[in-house]
Image (cartoon, rainbow, N blue to C red; front, side, top):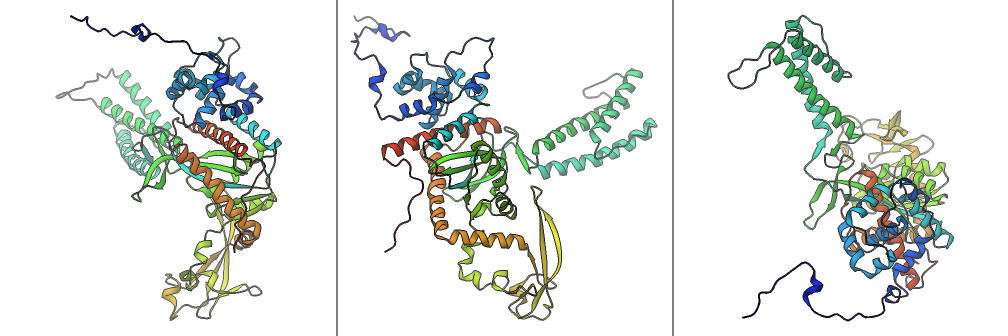
Length: 535
């Protein structure tokens, strides 16, 4: 009768003999043209002093050298490995990761997570721009124009933990009315003169609660609970205003978390609810996410940043300022799509002498026959510069009535000239021309139209056409690679700082892979894709 087979944890004791096979050196197993060799070379000579400063001089030495840990993380992001547990597994099984470790013990997932979210947080951006300066010295950046685009990526947050600003304001207003009624009853019964104001409601509620607590102590109020027990006057009022104060504290917390936004997510307060791209059923999902902006030059991502605003138009100016500060130079021209067009953007670009190649928001509509036949549009009316008047389809003049000032969300102030038709009464074209009950009005910013025309002429030039073609290939292509090829469509970390750290690591991995591909295809030093020659 055969003996019963027993399993145990040490699999080497099962008895099968294994022959030791040479070579033991991993160097000979890594191909000469492998991207991991390029990554190690590019990251080896960076200045890691800021990273080493994050470690305490009195603490124990790290299990793995911080420089090596940074190489491992960057290489993991370049190979579509983002989870700390999967990176740990790769360090134990993948020869490329073992080669990077250079004989050091493979770090566990908690060490990797602690390094990524703690020690690397303040140094990653500095290391990213150091690598870009290496590319600049190697002549890999054109420094001629930069292509800018943005996308929305889902946050690591529950999509059902949303808080809306309007909803909070509505419930806070209803509670304020109840508080006012309760204070009137309180003043009548306790012969007091308490009041509450919108600006100081939290402090006012705290005063009332302290007063009621003193009353309870002075009168030795006995608190009772449960069915059949009658609560005293002091207990009833104290519990009521305690509830008011708790709810008001929650509303104050919500208001502080909005930070100028209309909503935020409880799981990740820095995330904003945004409409993501349509899925295959054309359903635009409303999910917590971040607006990721990148700038591309010569196919390399030269700048990236995270914004909480879902509209690209407010991100351009702060993004350009941050990019110039980090890169140490200013691009002579900016190429972007119509989502970035605004008077504020044009004004800033003119002030810093950067040439705009920004497509107007109505660029595609201008080509349509329906737009050209729409008599209500300013573009289809005659304009006389001397008299500063527009002529409508009926031959009547629209003259300037007054000038008003508008302030944008970012604080930029613009002047809008209001034109009004002399008389729309009994006009046969009024239904097609305007929905107003009175005369038709046009609201026009002359400064914006003048700057838009300049950008429009720029994009129609031969250089502008080439830039627009390259923008769709380079920057939109970069997002296509990151989201589809790299399968990075949702952040793993929470908070704006950690999210930016993730996107920086991803962009560094992307740049290494791009440099590797250019070297292998002998395309180094190429900046723009040429236009196709038409027959």
